[in-house]
Image (cartoon, rainbow, N blue to C red; front, side):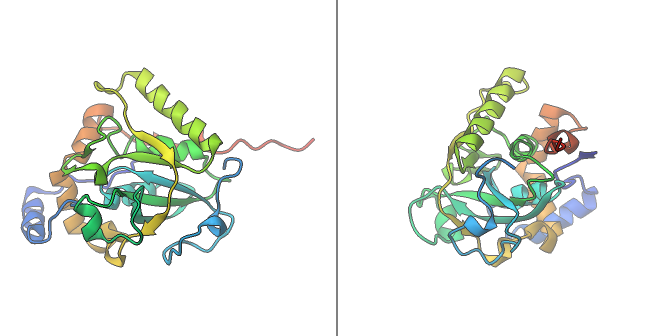
Length: 243
């Protein structure tokens, strides 16, 4: 079964106009593998995390975390996605601090998924249909390293999977520019403020206005075509029957 990961940004012209006006005052840049950490391994308090200790956790960055969260929550096997900040040095950063670019953090998302339904490779592959892995200076309208794309691996196996996916993507020739997305060790993750969580659900009109203006989905379509759905059946874990 194929899944379109991006919320449809194509609104009727009148509605788009209303959305842009409504959001103008608000608009700023968003302005199972072996030894994969599970929910019980997360050291930083995360009030938005699910409580099922059988879930695995992946940390992904692809620019505006509203869009990353919206995309990953459509994937079969993904239970919850939490927007937040990671990759920096200061403790408990705020949105204002991170968006100013002075903390070293990037907007990211923690993806809580069922490793019996989707592999870590599937989580990684989904990012190519959400972000631009050729731009390490930001993503689309949001510029600066606080919006840099990255894959934060938890262990050596995840690192190898992510590196292989990156190399395969580069070899495919689908992009005109080099694939430069960072693949780095996981660091402390700080959940973003409550109003950022599930933003696309809470503020659908403003979210669609933002995505329309960002150019994100237009870029994805320019790379993969209008039918950019991804078949996640290919990323289901292989079940070996006992003899």
